[in-house]
Amino acid sequence: MSSARRVSGALALVLALATAAPARAQVAPASPGRPQVTWLVLGRGGDTRNGAADRSMQELALEPLRLSLLGRHAVMPADECAGLSSGGPSSYGGLRAMRTVAVNLLDGPSWRSPRLTLFGFSRLGCPLDAAVGGGAALTVPIRPSVSFVLSGGAIYLPATKPGVDNPTGGPAKSGSVRADVVFRRPEGRSFNLGVDTLLRGVSFGGVF
Image (tube, rainbow, N blue to C red):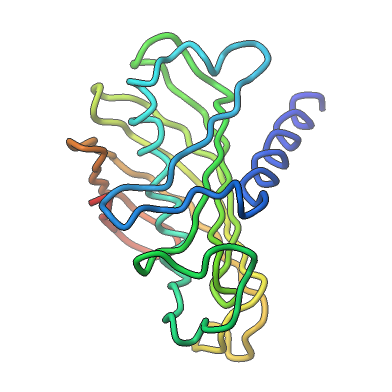
């Protein structure tokens, strides 16, 4: 019971920080890249044994699920969000203000060590596409720049524009479970190939 409460408490904290005040949100750059991940540190120090050089692969392992969930709910055109605000910048170069927070529940001193990561993310700006989500990712390194990642999570949008999947508008939610092989590329880029229950088939993507 104590372990379950600890995990649920950690996930609640991650989601709370991911939806923190807009002033604390990381605005995604217009250049290629991904939102900066804020890492929480476990009291036992299990989350501090790997240096910054290893963080890039850990962060890239979270991207297949995050991008899959956000991709299911596309960003609205700027003209449809004019005059609206969800408390953050409306857009920057066509990209929303985003934030990702993560904590490793299972970690190790080597790049070969499997990792279990809880993470939360948010997308701010226009109320019609603002979203919060979270999930867990189990990463099994194959090489320093290649990992197998099993992940699952969900996303929630408080309000949406009426459409095919949500004829009346209002709140929307979806979930997904993924299995991917993630390849780290130069300059913080990545490529992943996997299967996705949300897309119901094979998918590929990455940070380009």
